[in-house]
Length: 216
Length: 350
Image 1: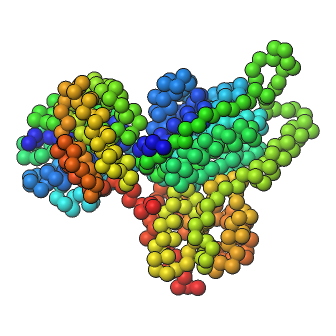
Image 2 (image 1 turned 90 degrees about the vertical axis):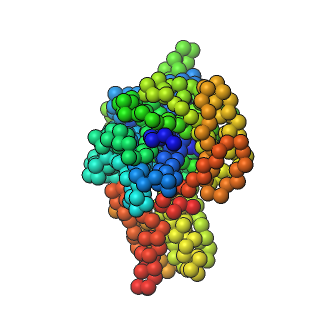
Image 3 (image 1 turned 30 degrees about the horizontal axis):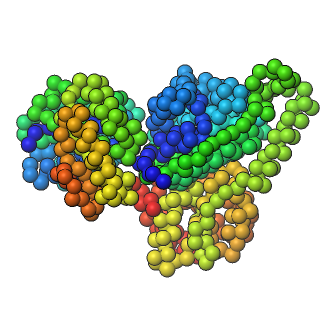
């Protein structure tokens, strides 16, 4: 088990949802877990928006200072590097979307030893629907950050309308991208009770980021 | 139809492309920058032109120019940016040019914050710029509806040669939902008025200027005639469980959707509540709301503002039914629970 787990990808690929769930999973096996929000691009639906619920579960949340947490500013706190270096902590890093979000990783590069970097892909999202697009995204993100992506993650979904067929469809596309990129698929994500008996390891998540306003 | 998972602003961008829009000019501002970015990425793929303007003032004037040659044009912004565009919008309206605007409204006034709001309702519906002009204003409540209203916006803009505004709030802009796009061939023809070069025909003029007051008044009268047509033909709204309702909630956009949850919660407790959701904010569905409010004991208007649409609700209801208001401001989104609690307090007071 690597010490640091970094989730990267395009906007809206599901990085935040996955990072939250991954931190919760780590917390079951390890005492000290930190979830770091270095999303400098998303205005809403960030780890920091779920701060209190997560802190109650004993996970350390690292985010911009309270008084500027809603500012439209690219803030990375000093503490981030500390947690990445601290051998006592398992760390999950939620990186902002696209090439603009991932520049943060270049800055943190020297702190990313013993780290797995996962590219989160939802093939139902724009710009990641074909093998060519996914390969392009992976190479572009590696180039912009100077950090190597180790694994792909199949997070194909249509929110509450997801079916197992949709997940398999994504898996097939990702398998081809995996061969071209020479990066294995770490796991497939399925929310709540959606059936999955595909070939990959399954990572079951609970939806946090689903719209909290109770919209029908 | 094939479904994809899109943010509201991305879906509006894709719908604009499906509508035949190949010219986008804009300046990034949260919470709608992903729309600008989406167009920057997608328009070159379909042979269109994306241009990041040096400001919102520049962007609106680029729209003015591109529209005058008959092209489908769009820009998007958020509240402070939309304020900057007002002068140009007034020019475009007076020159009778089609153009589609998207305002993903955030908390204000002033620099405000970047959270969702509906506080730009007055600016959108009563004329944010100068002079006697009107914008057609559409208020979607889901990502799917946002795509459909974007297609409609381009059609209405061409039909009436008038600017059309998609009035979305930050939540609708940022939330992701599955959407499907209708695959149909879009054709439009503005060649009968567009500036296309006057070879073999008399020159045309597109202008918002007439130094003679009688001439300018004539232009104004023509605009007003057009607005009466828009008012007669283009009101749109949704009614949800209003038939047997004792109490009517009136809400638009995202709040309309939250209010739908309130109606469901109330019905589960045996309370007969219905929802009237205006889809066009101009033309406002006065007649339909007037009819829907008849014989109700109470009309509750809910907004993410201090009560701006409330004034139109009052005009529609015209004193015949008691009206109450519940609103949150500055980027605070009301929950279904808090609205329902407020409603129950009102019912107890009756």
